[in-house]
Image (tube, one colour):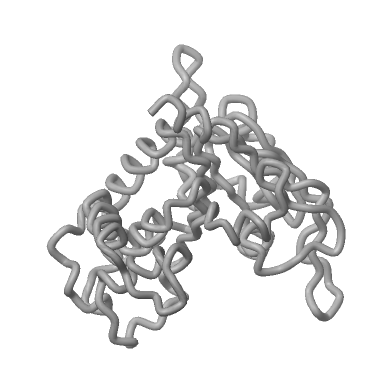
Length: 267
């Protein structure tokens, strides 16, 4: 187990001076730089249109920068993706729920990169799928149509798919949007456990109130990286004002000097 932990702890995701342009020539993000190490949870926050989704697409290799680069342990992001090292949990709002597919089939998609060309699952694939569903507390729903599930359950299915991939890096796009309290607790508890196992986790979220309680680091984006680093030194009123502009007038930050807790309330 220690050898596995050491492997994960050596993970380093680096975005180095990356600029991405749309097909029409407009700049989506520019000069973006940050790095994240294994064994940590990093929150990614910014207003709508700030470049969060573009950054995820860049890390997933869906788009390429016109300048700069993205690497995982000094390997190109394309090589990392080819080796199934990065798993992605999309926003469920982007999914067509009318398509008839079973929960187990969705989770099995996470195993495709490890199967042969015919994609016939073996015993190990099935065991990994069952274990992944157990981790997200969905055991017993394997044969349900995914469209029949609640919003929170759907989120957990796609998290299970990412876990089944057995990648070392997890990217989660708005995992708490529209979910029930139970699902939020399940996700946070599971991510905390994965962090302790050495996973590298990056989460895009609007749920600012929960960030200090489970994130180790934070990245603030507004078409470029405004700030990145540990929660204690980076999740500050000044940086939130830079990130959210005028809307930050609706936020009050209260820092308790006697402990590490930070409370964010909206007034």
